[in-house]
Length: 240
Image (tube, rainbow, N blue to C red; front, side, top):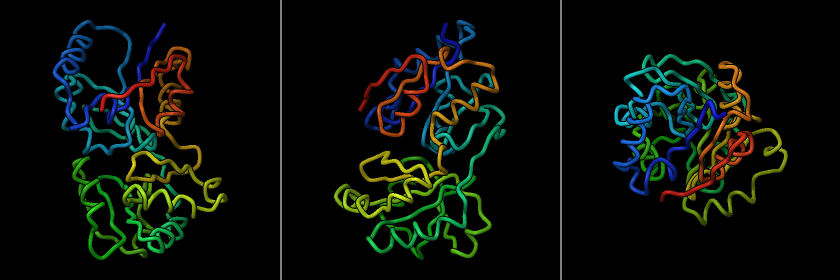
């Protein structure tokens, strides 16, 4: 029996315009009204602010639901906003990523609690583009201040060809040290090793005493792979 369904947002729940289809909204409303014991859990790379605009339409503010955000680095409750779990990147280890990004003309941001942080004097177009998509807030931060700031992940941004080339310069030992994923054509994300959507899902499942065989996962992108492999039932799809 499936007790939990984990659903990706961008490209799965949302269409190419980052919108919820009316039939999707209705499905969620009907699902909640049935009073079923199966949990619907949003599992996304977005921050809390980038999820919030959709919660009312999905009925997630009428009752308290768990949401897995930041590619599995954060779990929080939809109604209360209470953070249940956080997994932060070692802030001392990010300097080398910033330097590598700047060397190759790649924009680098840090995703923190409530904010995105730019390590550049002025935000680049790619930073503004990504922050706008997820309804985020962007702040400037110095390298010195970043050492005492919690980051869920780093975001390295550029056009598709830039990032294709940039990925060839990432040392293998860095890939072994961190979880590195190309989540969008314009975006590479860096998290603590072992932290991904499957990690977040596993932490929540343990909290709720749910087995992997009782979980279904729905996703469409590279950052969904581990989640799809973890779940007893995996559904790969696209909604772009």
